[in-house]
Image 1 (spheres, rainbow, N blue to C red):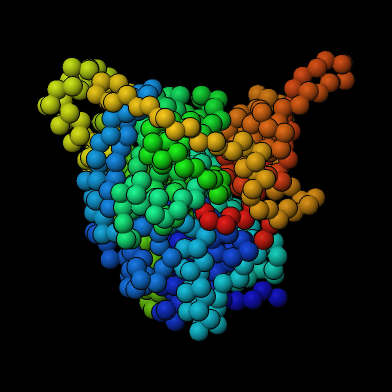
Image 2: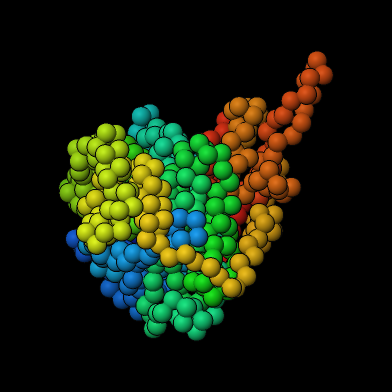
Length: 552
Ligand SMILES: Cc1cc2nc3c(=O)[nH]c(=O)nc-3n(C[C@H](O)[C@H](O)[C@H](O)COP(=O)(O)OP(=O)(O)OC[C@H]3O[C@@H](n4cnc5c(N)ncnc54)[C@H](O)[C@@H]3O)c2cc1C
Ligand code: SF4
């Protein structure tokens, strides 16, 4: 028999946990289902947790003491863009961009952070007969006729609820099975690849000129990444560095490139070597898809009694190098909970979806995701872009004081970053031209970092393999249909013998030799990329199975 709760939240990431805490502290009986062995086990971010000064609904709304109690890394106070052209680098302070409507900006590692958040939620939910249940994968809404009345899981009997909050991240099973959206095209996604590297605290503080709880953020753009639209990041943590790259997925597939190789290129660059004093001690490798909220965010993130929040609803904002996903998810989670509470008070549960939609639209989440559409459209026009490019990338302009001031202003403007088109000029052309025209040549006497080959990265990860139950099945193994996965899967490589995707020679009945794609899901980090770039049937693994991060 189906068990009944007032609310079921699927996914114990920041969005789901925020929703669950808001529900529980207002007396709702809420059950959180998390497929990982504990909250955070599956989660990765860059990442900076922003507080949004134009919204009350940040993490401090839930936990006014979080800055004292949560396992935060460093308060990112300075933000620098390094424009790279070959071995020339020009650094520009863009802290103004980072400070835009920012009340705080903490670097976090998701395993400790989500664990802490989850413990708080569990304690509060227990008071009202709920809690967090781990090792459970929700696979679809439970439907009664056309109504959503709960969730169906792999591990338990169906669970009924008055509201289902889908907070199951970028690869959301619930949003897809509820028919709110499919995977969509490559242009709707970014792919993030990341390493966490250990560094003794004193060395880190000395190298990055930070102290106490303060830290710094470093962004990298230019010709370092083979023309891919995106860039690199380095955030200082307490005694580790979060280093990674984020690229538009369509640009990775167009270049047929291996994303981890660009990450390695960044880590081996002499500028990076000098920045870190040649110290590089890799602790963990990870990857994940990130929805591009401009194209991916759901206008109506609800169906019946199912409300989608966070990455599941595509609520992620990229403004230039600034990535805001966790804070948007937390705010959306709180607003979804409030919509349910209001609808319940008014005894109009059927009204909760539109109510949530209107709360979102009136919040900064709505304006970040859906605002300035006309300006964005105008900014995307090819001709003005070409003219601007021709003007701004002239070395004479860049070398002039006037030009440098203008460029500094452009790259520090949140408004411009919000409407800038996703083109080569913005991501590659301008930073490369700046680096080339006014960058200093960088050499390093220190040896470049020894990055790990992909096989070693896989070997260093922890997996609980679901033997005999593949969570991804290749529908069409031809190179034309699925070959791209060999290059773009972050744990595959033509050089690797242990990765997920490989090309194998096969003979057909007539004896003709061809190549076909083979998949071994054991080393999968569940990023979601091959659901989009290859012909697959893609599911998240069953509860407790698959990859488990230690840091995130
Ligand atoms: C490289 C990189 C850099 C980033 N940088 C930043 C940054 O600097 N700042 C920022 O704010 N954001 C950043 N982001 C984005 C940010 O991490 C996400 O927007 C954020 O994690 C979304 O939170 P969420 O709670 O919606 O989803 P998630 O954090 O993905 O949580 C989803 C949860 O649902 C669980 N789950 C999934 N499916 C199921 C299921 N079927 N059943 C049960 N449980 C399930 C998962 O295990 C997980 O715990 C970055 C992302 C990446 C990859
Ligand atoms: S197999 Fe697919 S989901 Fe798994 S890591 Fe590779 S691309 Fe990502």
